[in-house]
Image 1 (cartoon, one colour):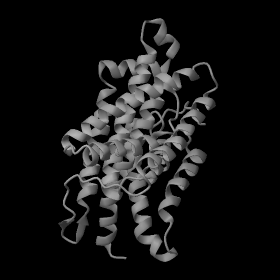
Image 2: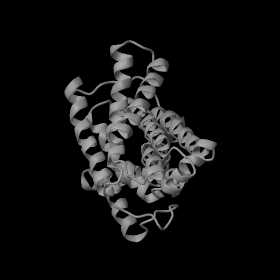
Image 3: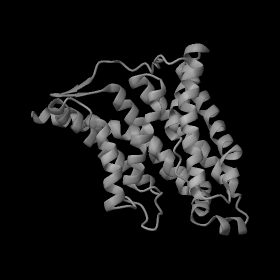
Image 4: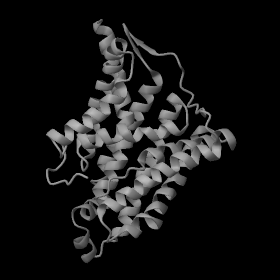
Length: 295
C-alpha cells in the first residue's frame, strides 16, 4: 500500500482519536471525583448536539451564541443528574450507581430522537468541505478543527486539576470521608464534575454532529470513549490524550487497510478488542494507578 496513504490515514486518525478522547475525558473526570464510571456519556454527547441544533436551526441563533448556550444548559443538566439521581445512590453498592447511568443512556437514546424525529439533523460549523492538501496527503478540515478543539479542552482539563478547585476535586477522589472531615463540600465537587463532563460531551457531540449529523448514533461514541478511558487509565486525563491518539490511528488504519480486504466492519472491532486486551493485560491502563478497581 502507498506510504502516503498510510500517512494520511494516520494523521487524520490522530484528529479522530482526539475527538473520541474528549468524550472519554468526561468519563475520567467523573471517575476521578466520584469513583463512578459514567455509562451515559455517549447519550449526553447526543443530547448536547441536539441542544445546539435546537438553538441554531430552530431558534435561529448563530453558532457562536447557540453552542455556548447549549453548553451552559448541559452544565445544568449534568449537575441535576448528580443532584437528583446520583446523590441518591450514596451508600448503595457501586454497581447500582453504574447501572443507573446505563439506564440513563438507554432512556436518552430513545427520548431525544422520539421528541425531535429520527432523521439526521445537520450542524454547520462553517468549515469548508475542501481538504487541506500537504503534498500527497489530504487532511479533513472538520477533523482538524475538531481534533484541535478537543486537544485544547483536554489540556484545559489537565490544567484545571492543578487549580485550587481541581485540587479539592482530587482530594475528594482520593478520600471522600477525609474530605468531609476537613470541611470540603464533597457533593458540590462531584456536581461540578458532572457539569463539566456534560460540557465536554456537548462539545464532542457538536464536533461529531458536524461530521456525521445528529441522531441517536452519536450515543455510540460511548464505546470508543470507554476504550480510550480504559486504555489510558480511568483516573488519568493525560492517559486519555495518549490513548485517544492510539485508538484513532489504529481505527483509521484498520478502516483503510483491512476493510477493503474483508468488506468492512473493522472499525467497530478495534474499540472492543482494545477494551478486552487492556482489561486482560494491563487493567489499570497505560497511565492509571494500579489500585484502580475495574467493574
